[in-house]
Length: 425
Image 1 (cartoon, rainbow, N blue to C red):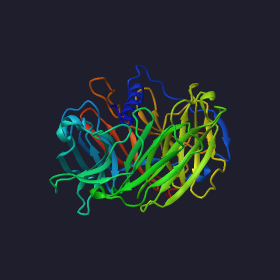
Image 2 (image 1 turned 30 degrees about the horizontal axis):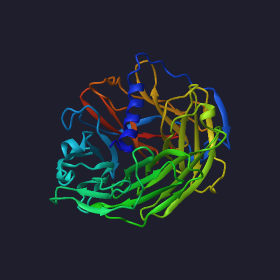
Image 3 (image 1 turned 90 degrees about the horizontal axis):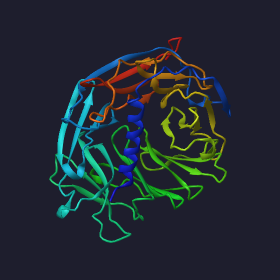
Image 4 (image 1 turned 30 degrees about the vertical axis):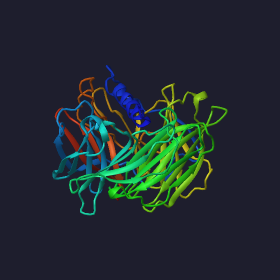
């Protein structure tokens, strides 16, 4: 059975390949300032606009786990970064993990996933993450379903492997009706690597269940439920935070001219930090048919919707705002790229700075051009034989952001500091 998690990851890769393999690239002109709603995005930080400079840099071999068709997944892991190989877990019955610091590769492991396929019947993987044990070593966490015993009930488990134990540690997860068509899932580890947030829902039922998991597949707190405004919804995702994560989902409206954006942020003990639902002026009727890209800012969250007419809209919500309050938003007549981060007040978009160079373009909350762009070296193009990861922002801490990008044979990690023109940051 093809799992929803695999379908969603495949769709995300196809989008990246389409962007990365375009035969001709043109620099994006600054968009004309569009309409701004509820005051623009001014609530996401302080003063910005200065030059971003590199303060940390490290290179690691691109093929750290040998030749691979797809790049590994990368996540912030405390003060370091965790890399997880992209190969098929069911076929290899093993996981490749590396931990990278500014000194290089600190840990590299090939974990045998014993018990993954009992009696040669493999489970359906619904989510993976790399957590840190009490000793600070990496542990592979997996949420899976099966092997199937009978329809429509499947055993849903969390299982953990590390080098210190012979077999997986297991814990049952919540009961849920699971199908390959309507089920949506996601799991991400917190940026400190201490826990993971796993979410699951069916797009024909107006609620999403969430549970936080710690090392050894331990359930940290009771299940949390996010109630949605409609049974017609999709775009379920987890946005990692420093100690846990936020759940994002989008419900449709009858008019098709707006959607309801639902957000539930949980802290380290699974207590709500933000629980809000806001109406955003995007929808199928206006040419916005894809799921948004959601990032965390200093004071809340921003989400970007792309339209079929080459424009985009970025909406934001603050943690202190009342649920249902009008979101802040800005519309770009010409889409500047893929939303990558919010740093201070500025929106950072990953895109082409000129004909040859990718990088991060910066825009102020009102949609006008912000500080100088971050220009990366000329990057190799993605091909069907070697799929390249797009440059991405891995975390933002104050005025510093950590980024990753690929050169021909090495993967680059850098920490950038973006100072204000006055030098106060």
